[in-house]
Amino acid sequence: MSAGSGAMPTQPYIPLTMSVSRFGKSRGRGASPSYRDRAVYALDAQLASLASSGDDSAFTTLVTRFQPAVFRWALMFASDPDEAEDITQEVFVRTYRQLGEYRSDGPLDAWLYRITRRAATQMGMKPVSVRANLFKARKAIRESLLATHPSYRELSR
Image 1 (cartoon, one colour):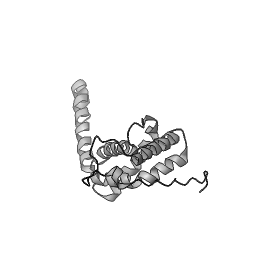
Image 2 (cartoon, rainbow, N blue to C red):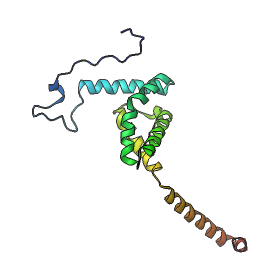
Image 3 (cartoon, helix red, strand yellow):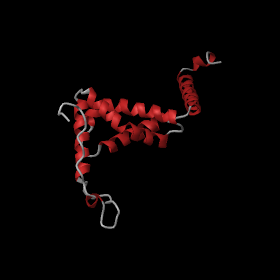
Image 4 (cartoon, rainbow, N blue to C red):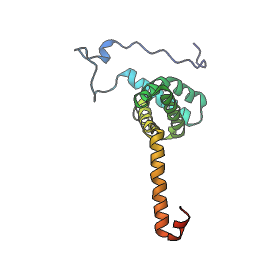
């Protein structure tokens, strides 16, 4: 494999004992990340840095790599796959705009999960709720205008 081929390097072999405790359970929260985890975090940080500096192929690699996970997360918040697809698209639009804010001191997938959760909560509102909120807003504006300008009362009938 040539250095300029753009293919991902192969991962080194990591024995099972490095990632699993002697009782067969993976390490819990607070344990230091394994060599492989640190390598993945470094690769993610490098891709994010390249993408934030304008490298479109690095951003495409990030999207390709994380799209399945983001879609699964979006499905947890969405009512159907179409809505999850919309959320996923919104997540990557926001990611593109906010890549400069990624500090690379934690996993990129955790940062993407937070973006997914925010996008889902801001998008998942049903049309009935939108109409109800719009009705309430119009009513409040009408009452406010009529309170300050009683002469408009004749126009509102």
